[in-house]
Length: 206
Image 1 (tube, one colour):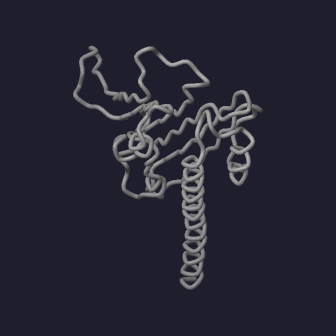
Image 2 (cartoon, one colour):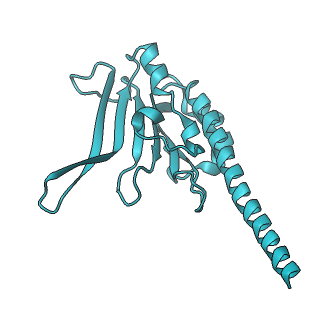
Image 3 (spheres, helix red, strand yellow):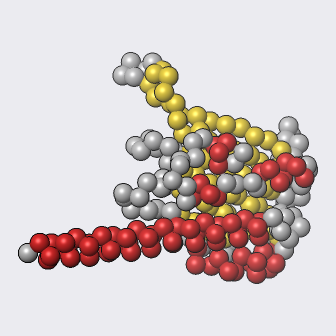
């Protein structure tokens, strides 16, 4: 009887190891694919790269496509691992829009859950436009950056001092400096498979 129990336990542990090991392998593979797509983003430029050129370079990632529009390509890479693996939920999204036969916009977002139950994750978002294909606000000079933090209030509506869910938004076009452009694409995709949570937007995108 004891031998049967031991054998059953070993079999169960092996099945769990195979299941969670497979899940981790898939997550690491998606991180690798996201890094390859990010390398493609560094090669293309809104207002200069044609739609045809963009689609050819993005074709290898077709299985990650999530949209259904002819003028848009969107790809998502996620690590939604089942518990009890302690890797936090993380998602990387790459969104491309086309106009007049050209790549018109790139929008990149990496997000990771901060506190379970809170509606907003930690995130960093970058939007790259073509100043020639869309009008910009009068005060926009080619680069802008803003941040937002979510907090909590008590039943009387008073600030409790608790805050989470840091989000940063970057927008740039052809007038951004090479340093600004490079820094805006420096996403830490290692957050997708890190057992240590990437707290805040600066750990996602320095």
